[in-house]
Image (cartoon, rainbow, N blue to C red):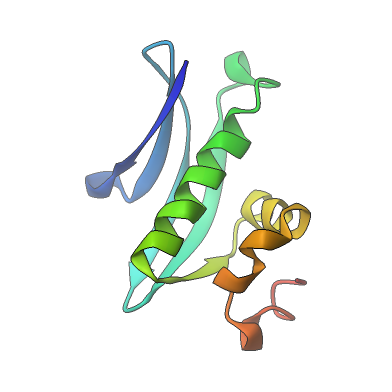
Length: 100
């Protein structure tokens, strides 16, 4: 069982699997925006789909908060490219910059 939490003090979303920290997605927040900078999944948890679970949760949070997403992290950018239902979170005038 995986859960995702926003660890505001460390500026990252964390995914916990069976009680252990499995990975995180670091971010920088500013007025009306969240920039995802780096995603890490511990090798012991690789191949379980936890990175996708993590990013899906973070993007849904961004949508709920009404903030724009700047996907500096290659994994987040790739996730959005594969899931176009999240493309609207990236400002239209910034999509080309991120290759979206």
